[in-house]
Length: 493
Image (cartoon, rainbow, N blue to C red):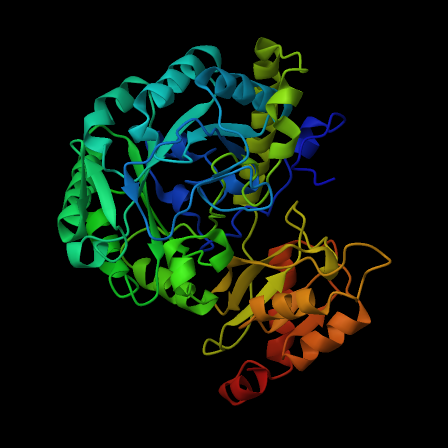
């Protein structure tokens, strides 16, 4: 079991040490290190606001908000879709009372869980009674849990005072545009003042409300993360302007996410054949926007009822029928949670004091992308065929940094079927486009051969080694073999 995922017999030290290793996401200097102390205190254990925190701390969402006040071309709210992992999908719609009970059960069983968010499946602020009832109860019964909300922003200005009253100091606003011409291509309608409004007029109202709400939150000292969906041909050339404007108004973090547009999800964009961005397009835009503000690169575009670490979902363990059978002593759970959080703090402090990977290569050496198969703990500990996700790192003369994650089909599902899922292997190799190396604990002969044919070098020599150290070592080896100079680019492509 992944040490970061709590089991009944795990020690506090084991619970503190899972996930990807700290500092591996984004730049080598986590943006949180540079913040004033009062801001650090708000984000140090919030997995969505801190790159380091997401390796150690878990979150959960409760689905109490079914109604929405806008329609997005990329959204289709679906129920009982246990196999789909994307925003707007839930298996159980909860009452506020059920949501509180579920939150306390999860917090008692997963002490690394620090954050409770309401993100749907509709818009939380279009369901104010259900949303704020949940927050009021949790503020009283689980005071050690951070509360946060995600919204499209249309009803945000009217809700800011209520949000501040409940000590909600993290709010995410989805802002896909600041130009009504662009917005009209994304939002077919909004529901405003008891009327359905369409076109550029609707987009302008939404944009104005989002910007007003952002300014009001910042004035009250509430941290704001802005989510933007990258839609090729629609807002891809516009999002740098979005990033510039939201930074100028005080947003803390910008999360540019790829459009999920598979036709089977039933969205307008999916049915109409609107493509999502390639990994390269997403990274290029994130890098361009990072000149304006801090970028979030570790987002997993969670379900509206997600439970656990970013990148995992333990929701099946906490369905309401199972929770009804649990006997929760939350006072005792808070004591246990405090000990676990202290242990994680010590791990974080040790990571911060550790030296960064020192790569000795020529200053003009080209960067290299490497994919890593890991089940957590910051080490290379997963068989290639078992991976449902690969973490992508960039090695360069400046060091090692996390770039993104790439979803993959699980190639091997058991000894009797390994090597028989050619279509899954093809899909996985396609998802690793742009990577020159894949690091894993083990890999079979057939996928090894297919990866090499695709120009990706498999490497199983660094099993159980720390990810960043292994990536740095392989990059060093490539430099010594003369694979990083300009003449080697074509051969490596």
